[in-house]
Image (cartoon, rainbow, N blue to C red):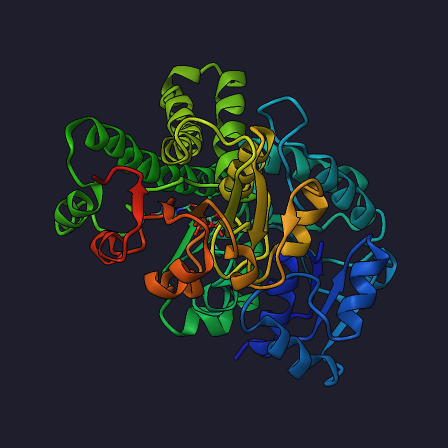
Length: 440
Ligand code: UGA
């Protein structure tokens, strides 16, 4: 076995915190860095500052071992590690489609200044094609050690499955320019590679594009089935059966064909927009113009969900009470970035309803973005006395609801199933007016 490199992880958000903790689990010594003191304090105290199943337990297991440390000091990180993973965010620029690279640039610049010994810097952030080449030049210009190199290693983890996806990824992609960089990054993933994980070694641009292409494909798949849902609504067909039927064709596959309120979160929406912007700069905007439709279909589902509720309330939300079940952009997460559920809740509130939101994990993060809505302490509290129930994030606790029990809490039995997760006949038999997206 080759000697294990010591690792640093720069940026301890969803991606970085998970990566740092999982690399210790895989046997490496790791130092995590963030410029946010509060985040670092929380991690040092063994507390993950967001909800991710399995991660708090792993952090707890490793924090006392001395093999996982956290700092805000770039000099300490540069001194300690042989391989540096840069995991900072690339959010959408305000009012534009393009990605904001401020954090990536700042992280590379701060790290480079301290790199006096040979190291491999590995970019994991999702970036527009061409960024890695620019950052390689930045390192060459600004790192005191002239043997410092860059690799690009996109990340494909899903929130809610972050630990599993990091320990057992579908594939590893390494964008490199030298044999040394390839060998070095291989040593940083040795236990993962040893289990037979496919490795694709390629150039920077391909590695960057793999990530945006994958997310664009996933977004397109969701919008495809949601477009079919629109057609189903016009014809009386059932999109869930349609998805099951086409999904049996292995070339199509059933995963990511769940029609409903559509995609949100910190990745798919901003990644397709950043891709549209970058393709425009590269003069190939036509090649990805379909992604504008993907985005529009996705946003139309939110408007349609508001309309379904309106139909059930005879044309007006004014003066009504509405329970919104779910605020996170998907279950098993407390992330409300571009959350379809929260978007619909806010729209219903603007139309004059009193909205009682309940999410098992995301009430607090939702309240920071939409303080004007009411947040219920329990599912029962959210349901009590409402004229309409909107199920917008498919947490297991909502899927398991009993129509009769819920019926005894509400004022009127009106239900919008925004994620197609309930059995319509069960609710209709219990006296509910049930409406869903793409389903009669
Ligand atoms: C997504 C990708 O799935 C990851 O592979 C990628 O690494 C990540 O973005 C990223 O770029 O960091 P994530 O945002 O955690 O992961 O969430 P997904 O599970 O992809 O779900 C995204 C959205 O699509 C959610 O709002 C979900 O409700 C929605 N969705 C998903 C549907 O509406 N229908 C489906 O069939 C599947």
